[in-house]
Image 1: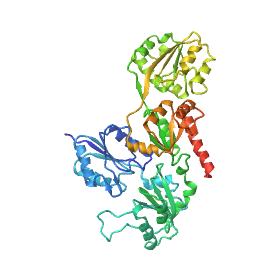
Image 2 (image 1 turned 30 degrees about the vertical axis):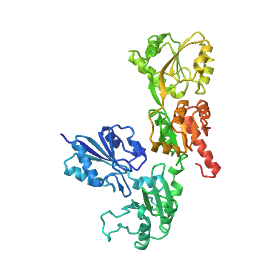
Image 3 (image 1 turned 60 degrees about the vertical axis):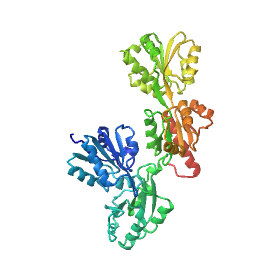
Image 4 (image 1 turned 180 degrees about the vertical axis):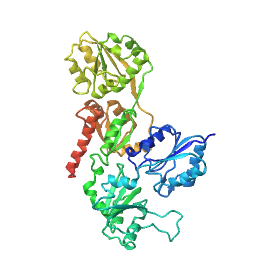
Length: 506
């Protein structure tokens, strides 16, 4: 069998947005992904190929390095496209060079996709530039611990002191007291040299502690800082208070659960992550088309007889047009129909098919749409509403009361997704806030998770009413019933909380 190919890929420091375009292209091509502890697992969620975890955490190794090298060779000899996904950069203290050597010896073709290293990205996220004209004109990078097979006489290769240099120690947390003491006693670093320790750099869990060489070991122990972490020594640390930005984001450090479907979660998740939140995606519903499409097919065949089509969701838009196109028709057959949508997001979905809605209510609920129809002449007109089978009766009954003839066709249902793991449930139970964008997600979530300390955030009054019905008072309700409005409301809630606690808010 012809050998496959191996990509040695740097996943970046932790923030999934810092992975490179070329790394994503390699993942897209992969038949097998072999990944490390420090590679953010969110990067893997969209890939269905074989995934093998070979992480090393402290002294706990899933596989010894030699076995990992053999695994790469074996998978490649099966003709696979293999991605070896490593935290940071594969060649910077990542043993990627050893893996590449074994691949070369085995005659396996490979390429290296460099990644953004934590050595400079974690300080950048903590507000510490490694070089600065007034503070440091160079920097050194040092491994903070000895290799496992080192002799008793071997030690860390400590640098000589230079007040105009920055020093970065990787993998040195367990050795931090020895590092600090050796720099002071052996290399004559001043005891008051500024030091920063950055744990889980570039992630929402990031923790930064600053002190001096004389006090840093006590400080990190007091703050319970744990690996993975990097240590920055030098005067550039003094810039942190002025330049810190990541941990001043309005949602930094908050764990927020997104309960939307997997296909719909990305917009909300991205906005929350951009504001510093740790996002936990726990889809509380799945959208399933109904098996019986005969009523929809019949409506599509007589589509020209309708005066109005009303779309209540993005799902309704997409499913309707899927079947419209399958019937051999296109948007021209809607030329005589006016189109109404309940929300701006649904209107945006409609634009993807080349149609602009004729009617969008001021507030994105059925009651507001009915008020908007009061300004239209609909008595005697024929209307089509393709919608979910659990849609409220408000719109259907309201349009009939106004004299319209209404065909309401159920084209999909929202169902509870497959069971989640105990580990996932534990994370959700300890989250800070849970977001709900529909009543369906509320009902399914409450069925899945019986208890949680988290606050709840609702997209609007209908969803809030369902929360109250199930005994959960929403802490946050969006004023504008959209994802943007929900994010704004959550941000305002936490900013107000910080002000009440007397914290600085930017």
